[in-house]
Amino acid sequence: MTMLKDLTEDKIENLSNMQLYNLTFAPLIQDIREIDAFTQKQMDESAICVYGATIKPIKRRMEKLATEVKRHNPKLIIFSGGFGWDGNNFKGATLEELEKTWKTEKYQTRVNKRISDVIQSYPEIAQEVMEKIKEMWNRDKKSSSDFDTFLNSYIEEIMEEYVQKMMKDKQFEEHLMKMYQKQTKETDKASFETWLKTYIKENFIRQFILNRCTEANFMQIIWDKVYNKDGNIKSKAIREEKSFVTCDNAENCLRILQKYPDIKHLIVINEWPYVLRAVLTTKKVADRLGSNIHIMGLPADKSQDLGFEFKDMNDYRNLLITQIRKMVTYPDVGDMEIGKYLNMENFCEDGPSIKIGNRLYSSATKNLDERE
Image (tube, rainbow, N blue to C red):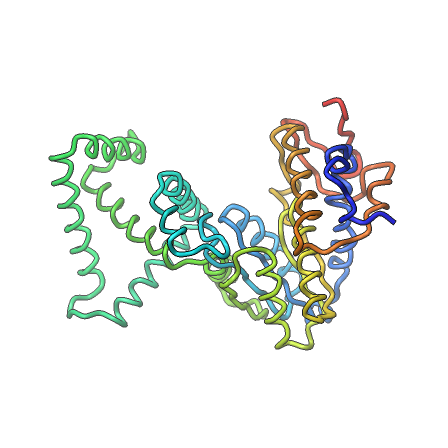
């Protein structure tokens, strides 16, 4: 019997393209088939958990969740994820370590890009954030001004500061003008003053997103404003916001389920290359907690009819080898028997369609040329 944890570094590096595919994806096929055959009664005994990430993976996972819930409503939906989406709130870091990273240009560039991705992917999040800010203002306000008056006054004040700085700092002026040119259309271009007001207001929202929004917050807003805006879905949604890494997601979700003894199945949603590790991690945590809940993985596709996409064959091999290496070496990941997957003579049936470069390989008809 060959176990996952028995793989050495040399064995992992020497896995063929077919073995990489089958080892990463084939263990999930039975889960997918079983979930597809679930009756509503079985879904009434199920929880679906979406583990957090940055917004683009979250988008794919939420789309998969919506598709699944459209067929059958599970009893529970758990959105699990804390502040790790900015790439800096790593588990166990001290405040001093975090503050040191926050000041770096690398961090600023990364987090600004990720916040832009959030706003562009789901404008509903920015709208909800503004409503939240307004709600907090109305609850805690210390003046007689209403929120809109306060916000306009704030924007005018910051605009004056920007104008004064532009007059004194040529580089700052050039920086703002470049952003203005880039972010406004050549035709029907907004005035610089109008653009600057919008820019300051957006920064106001962006700062709130950075400081107050968890991955679970994102998912809850998306669920409420996009997929369940009519409120017709019966499943109970729970938000868990303390998790930084997968084993945290697993433990916190399983502890929530301890309050629901009628739940027999936990379905974990993640993307194709990552879901097996999430499932094995969750299974190991379940064993430690003494839970006998049935844990399954449900992969989220890259897009319609496409499981995942790789830049080239090196990207394909590197990504899958990295995931297998993590499953082998991470102590939080459970073990499993893998001989049947390594010894398959063909690519597993009903596996994901994948794109490598500009070539599409679909299900069992793939022929990943070992020479590529």
